[in-house]
Length: 203
Image 1 (cartoon, one colour):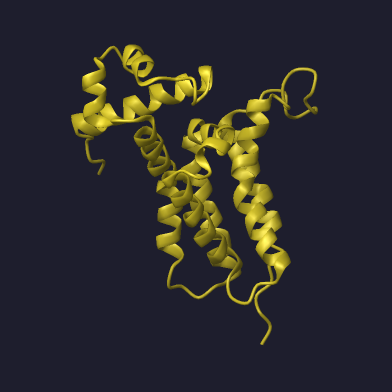
Image 2: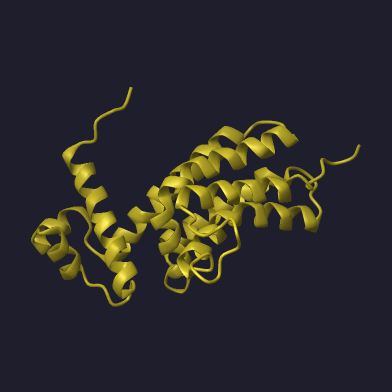
């Protein structure tokens, strides 16, 4: 049963969506809180009730984007590593990230601004924890690299869409118009292929 959103959480979600639109149009650094409030059709004071700074909005964006990552981590923690667990972690992560394409694009395009922010560092910690769950105990360097590449394939898929590398004149025969869902499906396929080479420790 779906729990209805409260008016406050619904407003926060709208603010995040509008902020993402403006960040995509003008860039994070050049977008002001005033512009976000104007696009929403609310006063700046009303916006302050939910987010007092752009950094607070970014924190909200990261929390929303990290939800499937947190769910996958909670699922994997405490379980013995196995190829089946590795693959299920990737599937759970991809299933949640498919509907977060705008968030992924924002994060990819604004890495310099986010890298040292509190929200960015918190997301980095989550990614490290997820990578550790994917490669399991006693990993080789190649296992760590494969786990990292598998996980970041979701981000790479969104980069390809945004860069229009699959657009007219550049596409292969089967990629003329790739949707975000199709891109995420392809990313999961690639992630599973890469992760399949992570070997369990030999004892």
